[in-house]
Length: 313
Image 1 (cartoon, helix red, strand yellow):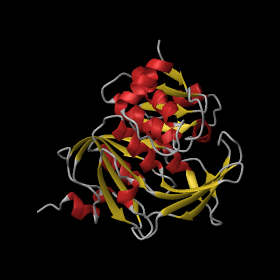
Image 2 (cartoon, one colour):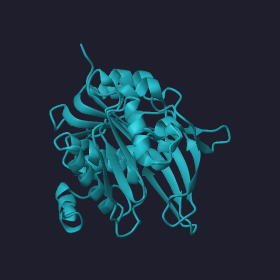
Image 3 (cartoon, one colour):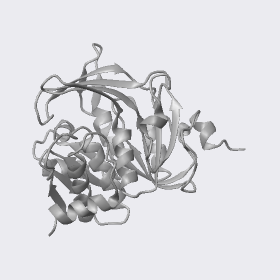
Image 4 (spheres, rainbow, N blue to C red):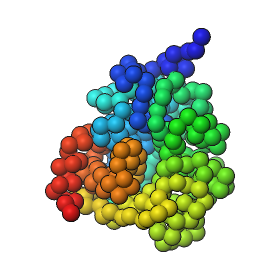
């Protein structure tokens, strides 16, 4: 007899299967206890991580969303963190909760130093809930969260979306965090339907400073669609045409989670829209989100209204 999703996950938050075990996207990754210090020395502590920003963005965009995360329940109240989200939540205990200290040096938060205060247990495919999902969205934080076997197994069951940050960002022996090239990129990129990098990560992967050229090379290496974020725009490339769309946020108070929000919006919109339409939607989504701290708590209609106001053709 097969185990229930709750049994497989070890614990489940509000996994009520409101969506009949069929999802547009399952966002997978560790919750993080974040300590964010801005360039003026102001400190903000919050429970975040790519899985939080991505999960809220996907659910807020109207996608049938499942979330699977790991954490130490003695450190994080997972139900409180995801309170109000229109998604089904699954989670499993971890020996430690991921925890990162981010020291920002500029007002635009483009330059920062990261220190690891805790690392989550690695994820395995057999831990995921027994549900059907069109896309497995891997929203990791550090190298070791996911491995190639996980990507291979996910690719047998649905499309694979990967934010490459977690394949590049390593915890060094002194707990600082540094970016290194993904040694196995040429082997696993062909498994990736949607690949997201930022401009700096694209350069690490390809050696190219030109984002358009980097996107083309990553596609040549196997990634089917490439999304590259920058503080001025978002770029998407599908092997046929390259598209860009400008970020139009009126302030940067919600800068944290920019890339995660963008990617989740692109993935979910892409399930029923063209590359160009998905890019426009996700760029409007992140522009709106960046104007308010915390994960996106609006609705799809809020994004469409923002698009009408600031992205009218």
